[in-house]
Amino acid sequence: MNCPARLVTAALTASVALLLTACNSGGGDDSDSDKIEGADQGGGKASAAASASASASPGGTGRPEIKLPDSFQMNFEGWTNSDPKLQAIMDDGKEALRADHAAIIEADPDASYVAFYNSGVALESSQKWIKGYVKTDDSLIGKVRVFDSQVRLNSQGLGVLFYCVDEGEASTKNRKTNKVVGTPTDVSPYLQYRTTLEKTSEGVWKTRSVETERGACGQ
Image 1 (spheres, one colour):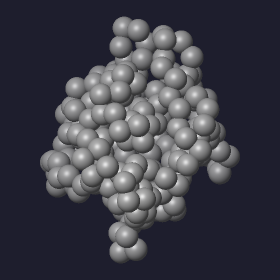
Image 2 (cartoon, one colour):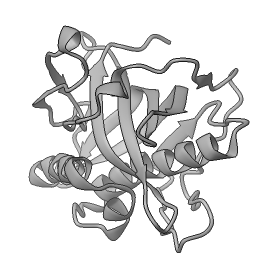
Image 3 (cartoon, helix red, strand yellow):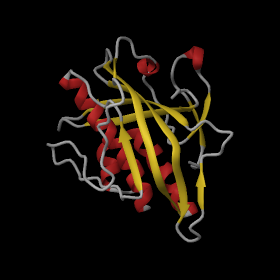
Image 4 (cartoon, one colour):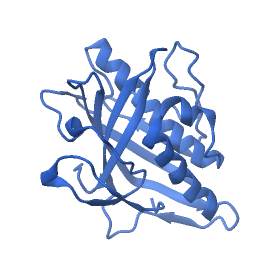
């Protein structure tokens, strides 16, 4: 999909420091966030899809209900882990991604559910990204596929969650003109997300940093 792009400095390791032009890119300060050693991979094509019209929020801690319309679907493939601690990181990481997309569709960068699942620079980045769509009066339609998840806990006790997003079947739709714009044919539809999450005293894994790189994932 054709989304507002912005430049950020990727705070990964000195050897791969570069400028990334991508959707939903946010600065990070965790030097471990660029690698997943021995992480569990989401297996196969079995889909644990978040229904487009129903809530998919995990239980407990008064988690908000996040709904997406039938016109936009987010399918999470292999989004499971045998370790309950790592699964909790994946569950809240999924909701953070769903929250950002729901807020774009609702044209509400200040949506409470965005702040519920994001903090610090990740929250600032999400709100700026959403505002980009609000400014151009665009919404989202179609579907995205979220796959190839990798998750672990680092030495600082932070969750490190990588995953890929296929935007090939997603588009923007202008609210006034109804003009639909898909991902340009000369641009890779694949984005790799590199996120770190921190557990709050209430037990929520909030995303605190996000890096994205277009073309870093395959099919």
